[in-house]
Length: 260
Image (cartoon, rainbow, N blue to C red):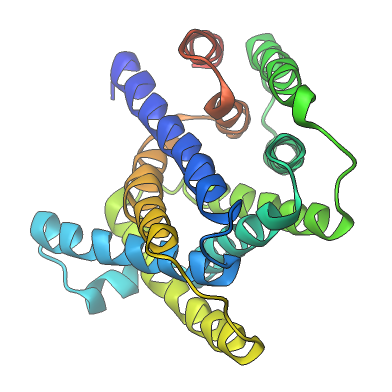
């Protein structure tokens, strides 16, 4: 994969990540849907989108796809998706972004250092610029964080960091993403039962559509693109680049040029 193509696919993945945040904000801020149902629809829609894509492009049926998945990756995916949804109910977008991305950076870059990676000055420069830019963008909306929301977003950050780290295997990204989404439905079923037991608020058509769009396009397609580029990135680069999802196009391009 050439440098230009790597930058382009990575940028598309970051756009998908940003769309996920926007869709969640639109659905859960009103609220038009409860966070549990949002999570279930999101992961189910991603599965429904990816399985036909895998069959048409690779000729693989669901049973064969499952064999390619990982329960650890599926667990990390579910933890991220559920924690993210529930945290959004009580956290503002500004402080939520700071907590999520801060945890992701700490876990990924810490893992890189423990495994012997030694990021160059460009990576540290990119990380500094990204963090300062994020603080600048979200500072006007920051308020004292809700303790429960903070814990949930921290858990979500750990889940996403490990999901990212496990995507560096170099396996077929579409198949691997489809398998992880499919396996995550086991946890979704448990969450759905719990939600029904506790009582689910009425779900609007708008909320369901937003959750499905998040799952099919922003998550299913976006995570496949992310898994496609991860084997070409160092762990530190993968951590820093994700901060670009909250940037302007100019900042994204600069962050990529410094880190890639």
